[in-house]
Picture 1 (cartoon, rainbow, N blue to C red):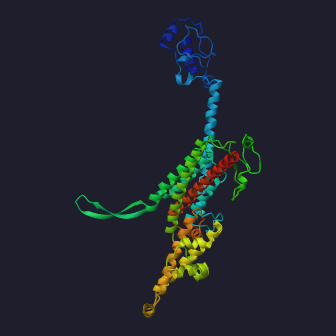
Picture 2 (spheres, one colour):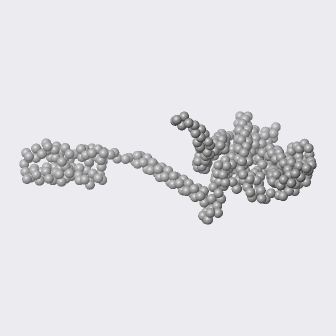
Picture 3 (tube, one colour):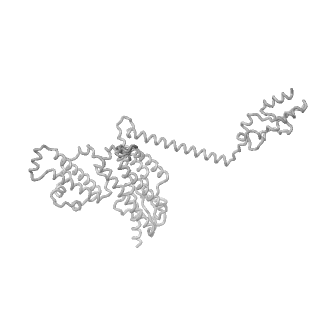
Length: 477
């Protein structure tokens, strides 16, 4: 009975006796009491050490009935997990904190995506009343605002901050992704298994996006590389009107920059050493200026092409002047109409344009007059048969006059834009952007416009540094 009782207690305590221990129990006297481990299941749940046997258990007798089922025989996955030291706990805490930071960053980006998606659907009308702008204008404004956010404070030849660069790449990838889903359908021939040839409609990326978007992305990368090349430079910058830490360096030069014709007080002032820049640094600046200038021309050409392909809004045509002569003035009109050999360069030389503001105002007048004459030429074709007979009998055809004036106005506008390549957008261009409803054209136009502006700024910043360098070297001589 004692043996059976002890055996029951053994099973109750969680120890399974081995066959050898059972034989020994048969031979032991009734006065002996077997020794068992006193560790319960709760103990193993909360107290695990790195040793094979628990340090909190009682010593186990070799002759006891539970000598074999020691704690070392429990599953390794539960009893042999190593304890973490302080350094390992710190590392684990660092990993956990990093994961939390990554999660917070992902949550923040998700919220930004939600906000951007909401603005896109609402057309920037937060009231939700449906009075917002179209999708094309929303994307165009988003690209313009992103450019202002990233490059608005970067007014010097220096690499972008990593967070700004990551913001530009991430946001632009999101805004440009809409072009991946713009297709056009074209007909193509397909051969069937029986040898017959049928014509089917196939989809492909739209031609203007397929050609211009990769080119703009390449120009974007080149501009980023130009800014990244100005890391360790011989020149530095000081804020205008204040002495920063950089301006206290020996040889800081601040008085020459004030003598520039077009002073912009908000720009930081470039400073060079007393003897000027080294020849290697000047060569590097000239090379990057030439590269940025070519990028500016390429972006401007793409932008002009996209604007020319946009439809002219009805609101612009409705507000055209009734007379092109009154819009341009008597002097320009008489020269354009009476001269047999029209020379736009000679006419621009006679006008003596003093500023870009005057050039832009003249471009608006020329463009408005050109479309006024084109509209009159088109209206002259929709006449009755009797009016057409009278025009044929007359010595001067009014439609030829309007066509002639419109063609000469177009050549004059083209020559004016060549003389002033940095000329701002005309009233017609601005009206096209605001009234455009083509999403693909909106992306290409806004993307090329901001790259054109960045390239132009880089050229201007390089010119500022070279101007200060020439002034310092001339003073030393």
